[in-house]
Image (cartoon, rainbow, N blue to C red; front, side, top):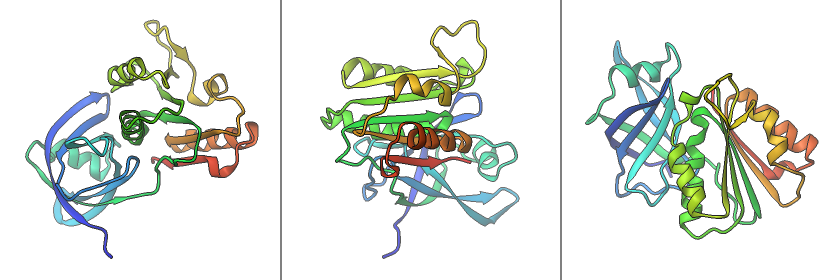
Length: 237
């Protein structure tokens, strides 16, 4: 059975951090997905619209939300980045295939750690918001790392969730230098040992820059001794 194709219409386009766009689309009534899945966008070449290539983007909205939400990191000279900046606008129709992907939270895991850098936050907003609002009482921890304070986005909403749900905690860390920042400092890889301790009941979900994903997987498996089946990763290029 072929994967469904949908036409989604852009309702919002906003730069929420340097080089990071928040995009919202109308959600077709027939589109049903699991938190953590993605869509493949048909992205045209601006100089030759008949030249179409797919690009995968994690759905950041929870399954019960009325719109589709994405956060997309621009890549200099990239096909999709050029299309987003120069062509995509409110009212633009986009052809997309999906949902796709198996990066979803397992029901048999007892304590959940989510580790993200930059736009790697997208699937975790969907997963965490959906789990909490569905009554999931498992302990959940989100580690979110960026380079500069202005690179943070959606943090106000995440803090609100942490205040509302006692089983969810948020750990933001900054890898660059900033006199304004009084929070946790260091790359995600260096601060993780303060947050994740050895526990056979822990499961880790990782999404972001490939180097970070590789380092965190290695730490969880080799240093913490977690089984490979409890370490789940999705890399962004």
